Amino acid sequence: MKVSERRIAEWWEAPGIDGREDYDEEILYLNSLTETIALPRWAVFVRDQMPRWGFEPCAARFFEGLEQILNMIGEERAYPRLGSCGDVPLSVYRQLQELGTALVQWGQGRGSCPWLAEWSPERGEAVQALGELSLAVCQGPVALDSASEKWAQTARYELTQRLVDGEEAPLPRLFRHACAYNLVWNLQRMVEALGRGEIQEPVICGEALRLAPQLDPHRIPLLRELTQALVHWLQERLPSSCLELQVFRLIGPRDAVRRWLVASLYKTLKLWLVHVDTLLGERHTYYALL
Image (cartoon, rainbow, N blue to C red):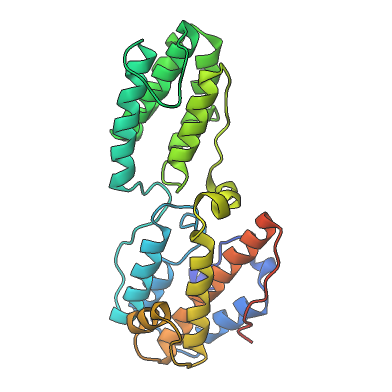
């Protein structure tokens, strides 16, 4: 495959990379390798699946998608993967169904909710709107937009209007990013705030990674361990853990194409980890490809 195409050289879109002027020596090195390796089409398509904007560590199924990429490298073929923005797991849809039903009932003055106490018409309307939008997510983006618009037009109370009116209102913004690992946590906070007659803004996308040490303490350590496993594969070390053994098995034998793919994957994950370090106020040392 000819690799002089523009999209090969300008593929990098990740934290800290806003254009070709921001390419560091590692990116330039990886781009230069494409001129010396006979890249098959499958390899280019597999790299297209790697973590950039739109496939981010805050997604609920990010690690399932990463595992699929490792498997694609090993099998020498590309196919659709999990973990992209908007990829909501079935388990989350089930939670939204249960929670949405309970909130609608509470908002109508029926049933109970562990996060809510005293009912009032104002709070009931807002909670019912939240419940209906939770249910609408399960039916797709058109149903979600319709439910948001309906409540923005018919809400009697300012609390509900502030919750749903406009694309950047808390609920539409949250449910556009229902794929985030912290969705249920966001919903609980918003419900509790409505029970006090208040609005709580959601914490979504990259900002959600700030909360990972508290909400999902294994998320960032696993990302670091997977990244280190890629380094050890590149260094031709023997696997030193069960996780590394599985990563090595998925990737397969070392050859020039796989080395380029693994190095590219390592670089994308390294960019994300540097971004996470900035969010968390931490500093770590990372392996240099050069």
